[in-house]
Image (cartoon, rainbow, N blue to C red):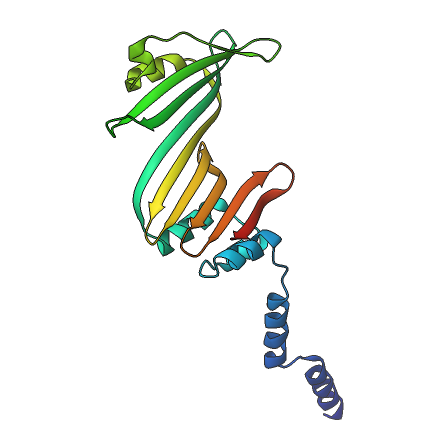
Length: 205
């Protein structure tokens, strides 16, 4: 009986109170490293907060948070650039730009370039129906049977209270994101850097 009592007392001493364990866990969580890019996000836009971004900034998630906080009144696609290899394995670049005509109408201009073995680019001659407001089937005819290397799209969102957002998307991944607040004189620029991940910088002026 005396032996069992001593054993029970020894086990009791080894066990850490639950409150102390919870305090230790919470302290460890609060000491979790915060990325420099997330600090830049919070420096410019403290209203944008998500613990999931604290360790590693994800631009898709950042855009979701911004869109929820700042409602968009107008969204535009300004440019699309497709880097591809055609059926003859020639490297080409197809570029679509949306511009405003003198009458205020949005028009699409298409251009096509081919790259030679030395890496030099040359313009490919297009008809007017191909270069100005091309139909989807015309655009797809250049890409049919090709290998798409990259498909970049530049977006611009106009939001309430002088806020704008611009971002570049490659396939489904956002590679660049810029958020500007003209009234508060603040701007945030983020981009995906090779071997460095997402790098964000805040500017206030």
